[in-house]
Length: 213
Image 1 (cartoon, rainbow, N blue to C red):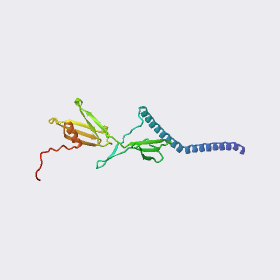
Image 2: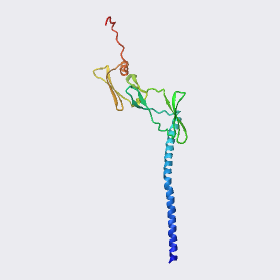
Image 3: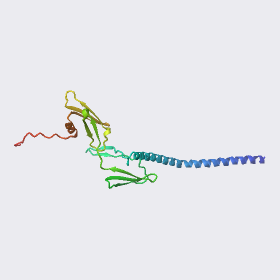
Image 4: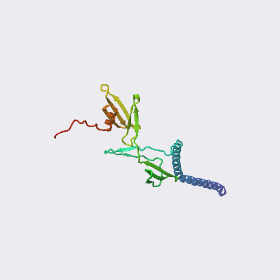
């Protein structure tokens, strides 16, 4: 009877050994999961960089040496000074960037990419203000120029309305997001219209000299 048990014990031992080997292999694969997840995240980042690089190359094929991105307005202070800024979505780095001035008058941000590439972002301090022109009948029109360089003219909505009884007056409604201005009783004449919106005072009318005060 003892001889009959030995083959069964041997088979059980072999199955146990096989199960332990499979368990060890599964534990090894389980330990590799965090590494695989990190590798997957790195591949996703490289894919995003490749797509951004493709966008830059596409711009280069269109005779664009550099890709210019707008810097939107973030806030406006009580004194009328504005703050503009933007997040560089393509600027991914694990090291400290360097901000230097350039001989061309630009502010340059140098940084090392995730894969060791050398990148630079330029900020032109010589900003310009955007403008839009509104054409009217007869080939005439007005050009609106924003006061702040961080304001995008495409965000502005302007509507004009004429007064029925007063032919020399006009009303204009300006809206940008939640902010709006309603100008009423504006002069229809273009020079006076622009002077009123710009806050330019009229020339005083000289009546005479005061002999005594």
